[in-house]
Image (cartoon, rainbow, N blue to C red; front, side, top):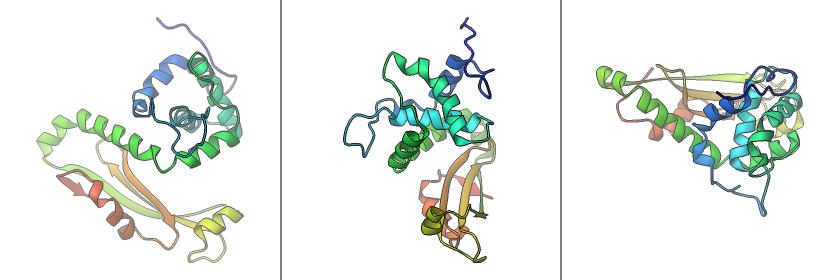
Length: 205
């Protein structure tokens, strides 16, 4: 029986630190020994630590990203103290996630896909099809200089827009793959980029 170690004083205070991290770590094991792809020296925000922190932040209901980051750090502190200290600031985490954005997501996607394939193996043998749904939508973004520079304006001429296309496993709701592009992009363009990564026997909805 694991001890009832509570974390933080807010959104994560009722979560048990070790069982939660154990569950999440099942899906991040592929990052265990992955170095930061662009760092010139040893970093505290390794791909493993940064990914765990980002996932914990997504679970937290606090209003600001800074508050969510602090709760996540409290949860990670014990798990990493004996091995390697993690970073201590949201800014550092943000920079690490940006550095690692090209290398880490494909590894995590592959791990999640393999879990889905194993879990749904029987269902798929019966149905003979792998049911994936695809949908695209345009999202208005905060009017910041970085968003205006990265995404530009599309059809409204008022705020920056991004176009998102997601392929979802119908049985589980798991995002199988996704693309985020300029507001002028389209679903067909994004799907053409992802089509080579879809499994054999896919039926797209």
